[in-house]
Image (tube, rainbow, N blue to C red; front, top):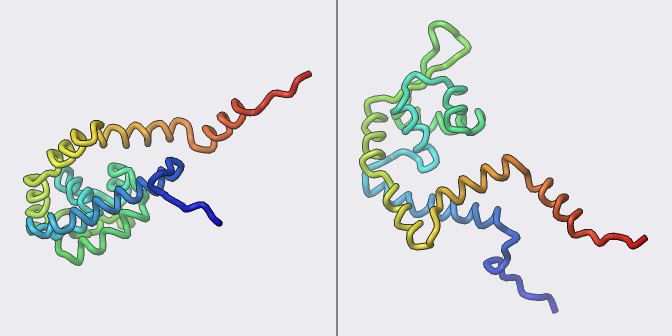
Length: 166
């Protein structure tokens, strides 16, 4: 008989838990955004926020500032353009470069996002669980950038390796 699998009890699936948290937040934010009249797709809010702070950005600018791949940002922009939130124009100085800017509707959406920041909601969640969730996630990301999982695995494997007696 196979042992039952309880993924909630296994701490070795942190990646899955992180994905689950991200997905749960995405699902729970959607009705909130709709109630507020925000049409920006959940995973594109950071683009709208950044364009509101700094207009006239290329794809490379956006990807760099958002710390996302060019491909991921490029995939999100057409939907924002279709929604009438962002415009794309050619750079007059470099025909290979496109410039992205918020439309008036995009600025209104950015203002709604700022007026209805979820910062206090996340702080409430952090207080409830007894840890600054943002800080914990950010610290984990930074630590993994400094020393990846493979290095950690190999180091721990070496430390726990029984030594042969001579």
